[in-house]
Length: 126
Image (cartoon, rainbow, N blue to C red):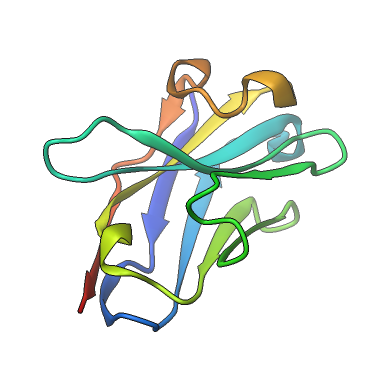
């Protein structure tokens, strides 16, 4: 069982930045593909970014491409999401997710992940 704990959310003005962290309590963290998803009120959970276990391939949703950066530190069992140029439409609960040996072609799908964190709120004011 993988435990994921997100942190770093908060309230920020439009144009500002936040860095989310997700600490994983698991052995062999490097074998897990890690993803960030978000869910706004009344909307379905959506893909934000992923970093694969093999080679660290990165993928982003079109809505965050060029503004958000996902990274991982396998020595610290942690994945990060650096969010720059934030917009009000980025407001949501952000969730970290993990799936062992998940391949890149499935890494954008909510259903591909079997381990989720509790989420952290990000609010961007206009």
